[in-house]
Amino acid sequence: MPAPRPTAEQAALAELRSPTCATTTQFFAPHVLEHADGEPLVHGVLMDGDVHQVHFRPQSEDYFLVIIVLDTPDGWKVLGARASARARVALSIVSETLLAEDITRTTGLEPTDAYSVGDAWARPGRHPSRRTFTRWTLCPEGDRPGEFEDKLTRLLDLTQEAAPRIRALGDACDINVTVGYCGYAEQMWGAPIGREDLSRLAALGAGLDIDLYASGPALAGVP
Image (cartoon, rainbow, N blue to C red):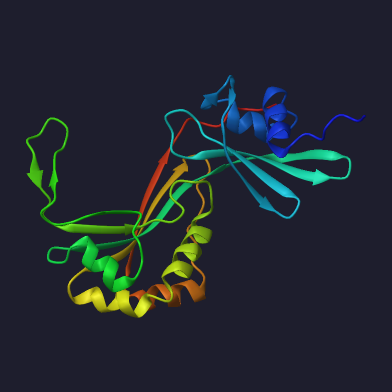
């Protein structure tokens, strides 16, 4: 009986153990990866047809490093390695008068995180106090691997039907799509927004707030 066919994750791990591409050495040699059970931890696999992008995360960094493998009839072919930013894309609605449940009721959407003005809270080392404003957040993709533009499209898909109700909150709320973009300083990518998504963003009556962060060591030299 033939041996089971390796998975994309196994092919990527094999490439890390014995690199065959110069870019694998360039990107991965300067980093120490997060591990689980003695192996580099796979944070996700994104697929585009026969191309699989296997995501790993360096310790103490917010971006991902990616091994790209192609599924062929003869097995997995390693195409190379790259960095991928951690993009967090969220709808944020802030109010000094409305409660989180008011915003939920008006929009018809369930937040992924929320607190209300007047809620008790305490920062570490500080005396307890109360929230001075409401923050209602919808962040469907969280910190999972994924491109900024894909996460933005997913968020706008979820909010499109509710857009008139969200826009109507504008008199009492500050409405923004917020983006935390944490990339590898040696390979930063852009934040493209297509025409259709720009139109849908405008329909929300939302601003766009993008915070860019870059960090990480220099690429390794290769012969």
